[in-house]
Amino acid sequence: MKQIIAMGGGGFSMGEWRDVEIINRNASRLNREALDVLAYQQKTSTIESMKRILIVECKQEVSTFNPAPSHYEDFLITHGPAVEAMHRAAHNEVGGALNIFDNLEDIEVVTVFSARAITSGGTLVAADFQRLAAELLQALREAPKVDGAYFALHGAMSAENEDDPEGYILQEARKILGEALPLVASFDLHGILTERMVQHVTAFNCYRTYPHVDLYETGQRAAKLLHRVMDSNVKPVIAKIFIPALVRGNELITEIGLIRHAENAAIQLEESGRVLAAGLFWGNPFTDVSQLGSNSFVITDGDAELAKAEALRIANLFWEHHEMMRVPLTRLDDAAQQAHDTIGKGTTILVDAADATSSGASGDSNAILRKLIEIGYTGSALMPIVDVSAVQAAFAAGVGSTVKVTVGGELDPQRFPPLEVEAYVHLLSDGRFRSESFAEPWFGGNTAVLQIGSITLVTTSRPVSLYDRSLFLAHGQDPQKFDCVVVKSPHCEPQMFHDWAARYIDVDAPGATSANLKSLGHTLCPRPMWPLDDEVKFEPVVKVFSR
Image (cartoon, rainbow, N blue to C red; front, side, top):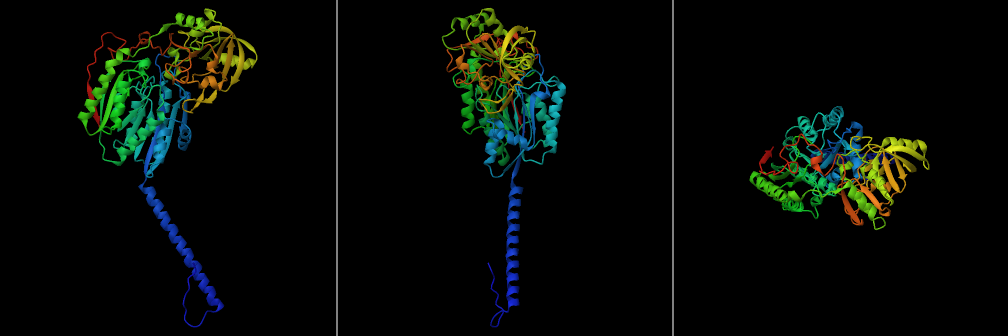
């Protein structure tokens, strides 16, 4: 607006009018500058009042019975803002946490490092774990000062020089971030809850579902927990109870299995608001380490007695049903014959959980393939297998060619002697696709679809998770159109296979993730341990941790 200045007298000369205009313009400019300064001050004040939350991710599940070791190259490594960008499109823990933090006006997210295993695998080579951990810790050193931290971890990593990698990472992170910083972690319920892990977190949570469908929700719960710890005078007390049991089988399906009694007790307790978090870790029977087993936990705000009592209640509900938590397995010969006898009567699913790549197996089992060929199976069959040499031969020959190759046993030849076959090269790809379950990028390396008579092999150069239909569908293979499908995962979401299959058979095949746990040869885990030993007693000891 123009200012009118009374000068006295009867009017202004042209020069005087110009002076007035200059004054008016200068006044407007000064007003605008003053408003800009005020806005900047307000913005600065808001920024200064915001709290920074650091996000780190490091996840892999291994089977120490897999002879093929994992390497640094088996991880997708991301730094800085790219971590946030990657997780915006993924329905996982970090994506869930970001969703919560986005809706909190006083929070600024600082993503610094992510290491996600492309899939599970064997024990991580010592030098590669040292490199991975060093990069993670250096990212923490270079991060700006923060008010809280969220670590998305798994809990069942293992390295040649460290059988508790998550505990080591948390321990070393504390040296950088400080003991007082609120630090919340989330884990897979197949994690092995070690005392070192518990000692170096402020609080934590884990998945509630199996098959795992609540990764995103777990991240949301972890974010809310961290924000609560940061914004109030909460004093977390953690009660942990070790349970000497390694469990498998359909009774672990959280929606319908017997595990639901203990799991629902933990969920109801947490949702009641009486505690900060509660849950169960079932451990990973295939990661043979010194603290392997199952655990219940409860975290309260300063109430140690409540934490102890509820952790004991959950543990007892678990132990009450533990003997039912095993898999009734069908002999390989019998399973193959059943598949042959029911050709044309709907799809038979042969579950080869002993070679479950998502649990850490090598993925190169040819046991069922060999057996189907031996019995002269004539129906259509679909199965995955890992064999880089067979893939290379297929790429060299090209689509439409016939190649003589060996398949299987390239990574675990002692269990799976290589099988000589003649195969038609149907399709070739770079093996890049997104998971059906969580929209995450998956990578099987160069991939060849090979046909051995009526049997179709989706052959990858490297292991890839197989707990849904992603690999099959990405390579033009619809499982519902086959008489028999080999599924290398102990459990998938029902709609993937179970809901439409005519029959579902758990096969007693060899492998690094066999549900026949006594066949694996545990040497490091605590003993006695059910079902590895007879007449195992549960004598609960409650351990309490506080910061």
